Length: 287
Ligand code: G3H
Ligand code: ZN
Image (cartoon, rainbow, N blue to C red):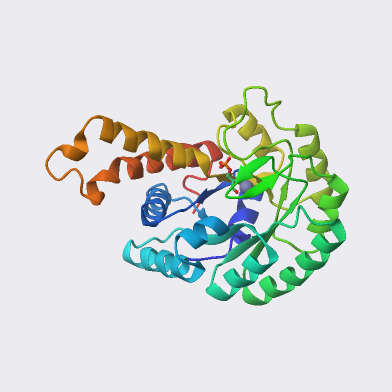
């Protein structure tokens, strides 16, 4: 069932769990995530970065593929198609293409410009029944060409953006995209608590979900995080399982080179990763 992320995240915030956003790259990724969500009766958000959108030949293709799968796979759990770290231009393209949710990443803009553009998008999303995520501060590291410095968000700026009427807010709290370096200091729970204090019922978003230790994930959920984004971890799991298949020479046995066989171990590995995360985030059975 294609829905905006608004209601599922409000329910998550009230129920003290988080909904996973898993980024998609192709048919296998999408199918793995959707079937796992259905098996576990969990709501889910499919994240689409601008780069992945281009790779999949455009946002309209993404929407058509997801809608087709929802029908053919009989997916009844709530599913949102969400633009991840979108520019202002990409937000408009996704609104037109039929996404049910967008993230406007104005974190690199001067705050006044971030406010103005967010305001405009709040209005359009409300008219269209779509949900909108905004970002304050920045997520460190690089994801699909989006580079962040990793500075913690200013809680007052978070309140200002939250008050514009967005549906979810990503605040930089020392989180980083990709694999965390060994000298990473961990999440800033002080920042998160201050943001939560000022933004109240607003669902908060934790980016850079790959490799954050379970105790920090649980504490973040306790402090108001209701959406957690995971991308790199599925990619690593897919690559490792595919490498194992090829190194074992399975592609050379029988018709093991058939892409439907070759891509299967990686697809199963994505499913296992998504299952583990949904269990950790507490969204199982919450559809
Ligand atoms: O926006 C997507 C994410 O924040 C994913 O981060 O690749 O570190 O899991 P990750
Ligand atoms: Zn992110």
